[in-house]
Length: 401
Image (cartoon, rainbow, N blue to C red; front, side, top):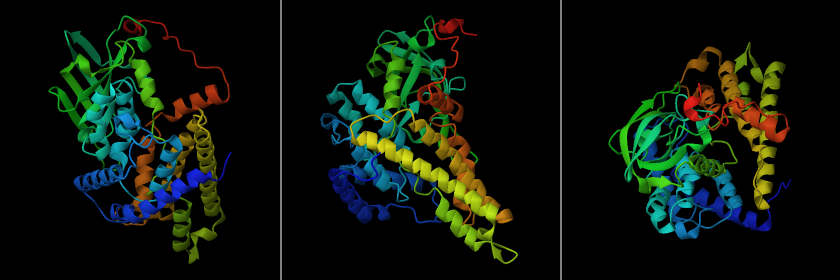
């Protein structure tokens, strides 16, 4: 494992760090300031546009589709440095990290540029229409159907937990086109305009009060066969391409509270005139957070080392997501516990970061692979344990009970 950048990486990091120091503070949200959804989206689009104009969007994308043509380690370095600022990038993560790379992989370059460049500038947002009420962790269980009629497909079904669908212009859609074959063989991938007649988006208000997640209902939605990505029935292969392009975000969110915030809070809050930090059990709980974060940092370094050598990070990366989501929830709970009854005051700027991550973390533990799925990956692909029995592997989808 390498703990230091190579000479070329260090030069690039310094270039990125200097540019961000000059530009990012203008687009970062001041701590404690409340924003409307519209204000956040305006800030996100402005920051995306500025990054694109200076070559910090599509860093690893091919030049022929409008990308920078850089390498994965440069994307990692930029993501690491950007995470130091409270800029709002979430609405573009799925599109930039997964949807658009899939699009240009399965579409002629000249055609792909119509969609790539507006997405890079932040003019258009993409979402991923994968998960369904009966197909979350088992993505191959999708029941949304696409029936061919001439040069068109008619789609009916429902998607759920679709991030930022309420702000999206386009989406990648995985649908079942053949129920008479095994579930992994009967799906096809499309992209759709979210304004197409028959597409209805219903925001889901989460415990945080936000509407990042959505239900999407598709009723007799007609899409052209030209919007198909890959061959008919090869949707699973295309979906794997999408997941392989998942964003190389090796770093935590800028606004996520951690050890420093917990120590500061435990020094300020007193019990019987004595700071809580003097309590051994409090110090032990904070130390556990430190240990978790240190382990995550070493995992990030391992992944970064692999990328620096031109290799792909291994399945060990699943450990990082599993530990990160649980740790953020533990940090939120500990921060609120330290404040006792005041921990329920969402208007208190000391409380709000802890409260937000306490409420947000359960969703984080589901998104991008549930804890249970990640444990299976670790067990099978890292530890070499026997795989789960999959009794429906070769059964036609319409015969699965």
